[in-house]
Length: 301
Ligand SMILES: O=C(O)c1cc(=O)[nH]c(=O)n1[C@@H]1O[C@H](COP(=O)(O)O)[C@@H](O)[C@H]1O
Image (cartoon, rainbow, N blue to C red):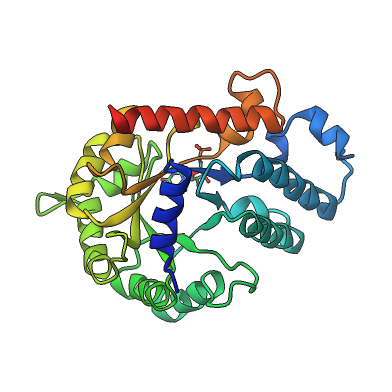
């Protein structure tokens, strides 16, 4: 069995980019012309809307599948439609796998040990054909080590990945994550909790799939965290729509040009909202190519 981290690093090297695309399908961001073409109106049923988000994802997947190593669906955009949305998420995961893309399912879960195990078994099952079968998930750390360990154990057992929210990209993150305890930031203490599981699960690629979410919006934190967790893979959001800069992206990578995946959702999925005249398969592809070029430039200079 080739474990998640080695498949991810292999796909990054094959596609020659650490950029990934977030699948956050929101009807109110989709072009009106596209919705009209799909027959979506204010009277459309929940099932029709959920099918529309799946169809939109197919357009995005077809535009970017050969360019990037992975996609990151955010569960909330699917849960919004109840069971129909869950079906749309399952179909999206399967469509991504069919296109040889790794799937990082963004669920940001966290709970007491017994429930954490159930979450991990739901999203990271050993059989790839199970619903929700993702390659990695995002989790939140604030219930403590007994919340983290079941996720780590399940992931290590089945060769999957975990991204712990260590320093998130949002503007309010510092109010909690930059609290100081004994002269150290809370995010550094959270990183300590990951280190031992990460060190015990280093793959042939030299990296560990026990990783961290580190926003591109906080370069100083990223520099510290890169030193603290040298072998962990970082999920790096906050580029594009959230304005994270080159410095923050660069800080998340090691000198070998590896160590992170740079994730962009809205700026890729909805080019018409970010300066492009239209959104279609071509403009989505162009948006992904632009991100890839930007990141390549950052990592090679
Ligand atoms: O885990 C994430 O992906 C994540 C972590 C974080 O710190 N900040 C963050 O924006 N995200 C996710 O990234 C997506 C937003 O990406 P953009 O549309 O590119 O800004 C949403 O799905 C967020 O939930």
